[in-house]
Image (cartoon, rainbow, N blue to C red; front, side, top):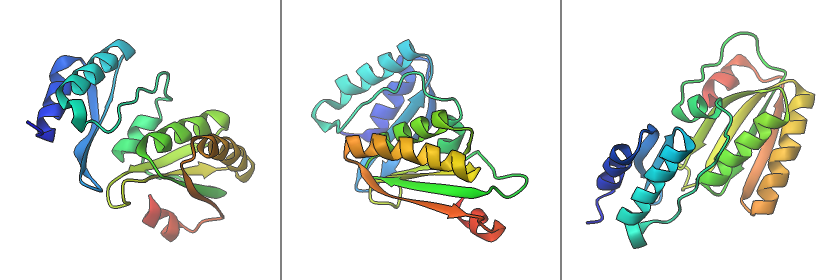
Length: 172
């Protein structure tokens, strides 16, 4: 009754989904991110809704998400090679809008997604980091910010040109 781990276990048992994240987050909530075939994700979300009932804050399915999103959420997108021309950091007021905006951005331009950080130690917010050519980053930024402004969840964005390796290493 109210055990967040119970919701987590139920999601895994109810459908064939891969868990990207399952943990308590700021401010005192439990976040579960899963991926898989749409029908399986839908079954997992329905099962979680039934179990959580009034304790559920939000459940959202993002269909046709770019596959590069998953390693960025999992923190398995290492920075390798030459330094990019620029880095774009976008912060949002919600986990869901962060992931959706990152998806919009990487579909808008030929860029790399380095990281998506959701909820932990950022007051329930999220941010994502993109790297690449300055013009491509500007295009991605325009699309992502337009989406976030419509959602009302934009905190801020910063485009850093010619980042040093030490700066890049500290943010990724």
